[in-house]
Amino acid sequence: MIDRKVKSIRALERGLDVLLEVQRSGGLSLHELHLRLGLAKATLLRLLVTLSSRGLVWQRLADGAYLPTALAAPGRRSDVTERLAEIASPFMVELSERVVWPSIIAVPRLDHVEIIETNSPLARFDSAILGPVGVKLSYLHTATGRAYLSACDAREREAIIARIQPEHATPEDRELLDTIIAETRTRGYSMREPHHPWPDRNKQTVLRDGKTSIGVAITTGGHAVAAINVTWPSRRVSVDDVVSRHLPTLQSIADRIGGALETT
Image 1: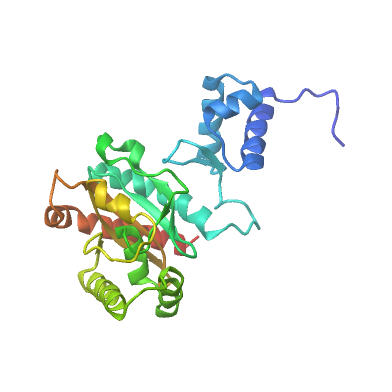
Image 2 (image 1 turned 60 degrees about the vertical axis):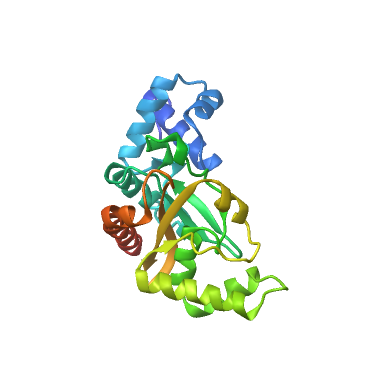
């Protein structure tokens, strides 16, 4: 029986208040926590650092939000996307340190891939800002989408193509897409080019934004689960230069993320 005369530990109460608020909300910024709990931001930061060190919360790179861990809760069945974003975040920090250009990670949805994390806030170039989390990207017109489409199982690929194929598609259009997929698999990385005629999302943006990307799939257990890219201003450096300097790093990071996901 708890002795009601014994005083509670105020610091512990505050820490639990922060943890419960993050868990209830699914993710909050430092400012939002400050408004909800009325605690000074310096105090909140110390509490969040402590909770993070114990594996109870983590901070997303893309927007600085604090989220409940998807990895350490006993008996909790977390979505693979939640686990992937949390696992990938420190690898994305390392990638930012080794490759000057920013990256995103995106996961498959029915007719698009969706950004779940980006190291763009760590990049030193405003001309290559990516994100935010939740942005929908084309399977056809982005390197990230093509990387996943080229690496996923054949039955899944056919289902995706059936969803995004327009009514006026020609046999030549499908042949071009099959060629793009085959070349991507042979090369070991995807590109935005050659452009494809189907009017899927992002096409006009890709044609006008002055950026170039390469991407590779993240796999676990032999199956593609996501894709990761590197994006840079086209005028700054060539694809060949980025591939020669940074593709091994990108592939290594993708492999390590996949391996870490497989063991959780």
